[in-house]
Amino acid sequence: RGTTPAGHRRAERLRGLTRSLTPGRRQGATPVDGPLLAVAGAGSVHTRVITRRVAYLMGQGVAGKNFLALTFPNKAAGEMRARIAAST
Image (tube, rainbow, N blue to C red; front, top):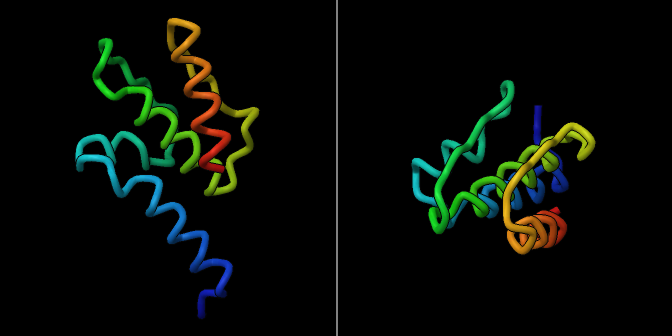
């Protein structure tokens, strides 16, 4: 069974979402089975991992209404919202 050109583009876009992450962070961003709790301190790149995970799962067909992503302060939440919108 072959992959369509659209399927190739989607796969490449999903790989691009995680290409800049370290292997450990990539592991946190790409699993699709079940929930994930990511706890991280300030300045630990957790926003990037969380936003890449949401974008990755949306690229896999998971609807946005199925996510709950929490962060603080409000500035970080705004950044997450903007990054997810730009990635999907």
